Structure formats: structure tokens, C-alpha cells
Length: 60
Image (cartoon, rainbow, N blue to C red; front, side, top):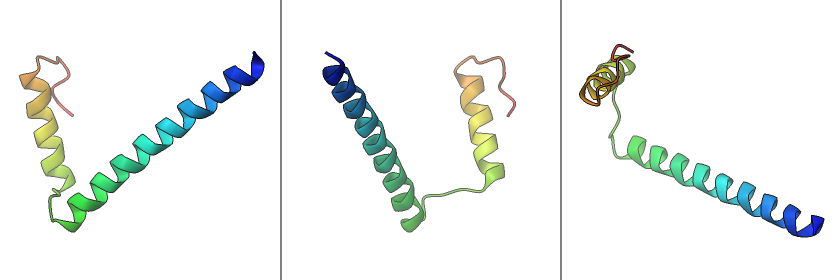
């Protein structure tokens, strides 16, 4: 039984690692394709997005 739980934990960790690597790849592709913005632009976009979703903490 312990071996089965260990297998599941390893599977979950590997899945999380794969998801992380996929997201890193997406970021690298965005940089390569020029789809980036400055930190100030990102803050402004995030504030607008948070305000649009009704989040009280709209200021970032």
C-alpha cells in the first residue's frame, strides 16, 4: 500500500513539473515573439483586470 501512495506522489510531482515547464516554454515563446510589456504596463493591466473582476484590491 505504501508503494502505491509513493507512486501517486511521484506522478503528481512529475505532472506539476511538466505543467511548470510548459508555462516556462509559453513565457519563452512570448519573449521570442515580442509579446511582452514593461512592469509598469503589467501593473496597469493587472489593476484594470482586478477592477473589472470586482476585486476590492484593484490597485497593484
